[in-house]
Amino acid sequence: MRTQSASAITSFKLCPMKYYLQYVKRLKLIEEPEARRVGTNWHKCMEVLAGNPDDPTETLAAHLTDAYAIRPPYIETDAWDLERIILLYSALGWNWFHGEDKIETVATELRFDRAVHSRLKRTGRIDRIVRWHGRPMLVEYKSTAQSLDADSPYWDRLNMDTQISMYLLEARHMQMAGDLSKYALKATDPLISGCLYDVWRKPSIRPKKIKGERETSEQFGERLLEDIQERPEFYFCRREIPRTDAELEAADKEFNVIARTLEFMEARDLWFTNEYQCLGMGRCDFLPICSHHLDIDTELPEGFRRS
Image 1: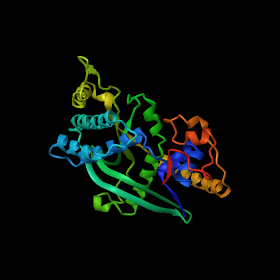
Image 2: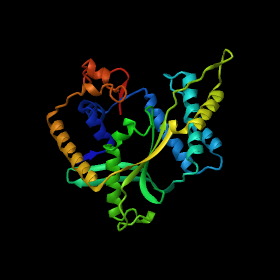
Image 3: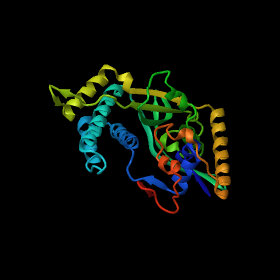
Image 4: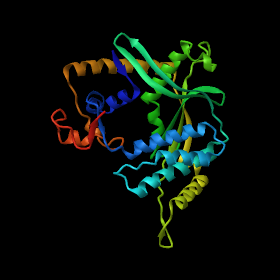
C-alpha cells in the first residue's frame, strides 16, 4: 500500500526528480540548512509558549540553551549564538504581541494513518487543534523571510497549500468518525473548515558596531525586541486560511491523481526534472546532483547521506 504525506506531495509538485531523490532514494543533506533548522526551532518555541509558562523568558531561555548546546562543526560560533538570540527575543516579542489574543488548545499531536482505498493510505501529524474566537480550527506556526503585508504573494499561495488541505481533510474524517468527541468536537458539530496561520517574519537586522566595538548578543537581542515593539506587524501576522467543501473535494481528487501518477512513474522508473524550481523556493538541496548528472547508484554524492 502506498503511503502519501503532505510533504511528499509538495516535493513531487515542485519537481518529480526531487521527490525521487528524497523519497525513493532517501537522500538527505548531512548539513541541515539554516532555514529548516530555524523553522523547526521556532515551532518548538511556540510549543513552549503554548504551555503558558509562569516565566516565559526563563523557560524559553532554558529551552533554547538546551537546543543550541551542541554546535555543528560547519557553523561558526558567533552565527550559532546569534541564531539562538534571534529565536529567543523574537519569541518573547511574539508573546508580548499575541499575549492578549488567547488561543485555547483543544488537542495536540493527532496522528492520522487512514486507508483511502486498498492501495493508498495517508499519514501525518496534526500538531494542534484550537479554538480561536470561539471557532475550532487547525493551527500552523511558520517562519518566513517574505513580506507579511496583506497583499503579499505569501498569502495567495496558501489558498492552494497542500498541507492545509490534507490536514483539514483528515481532521474532518477524524471528526466524522467520532475520534474527536473526547475533545468536545462531535461528528454532528459543524466540520472544521479553517487553519489559523501564525507567521513570524525573520529579522533582517544584524549586530552592529557601537563605538568601534561589536554589540554583544544580548545587546542585539534587546535592540531586536525594541524593533519588534515599534513595528510588530512587520514581524508577526495571524490569518485564517479557509477551505470550502468544494475546495477540499477538489484537493482530495488531486491527491488521488498524484498517487496514480506516482504508481505509473515508479513502475517504469520514469522521472524528470523541473529546472524552474532549482532556485524557486530557496536553493534545492539536490541541485548539485541534477546539474552535474551524478550517478547516485554508483557513488553517494559528497555532502549527502541516506536516511
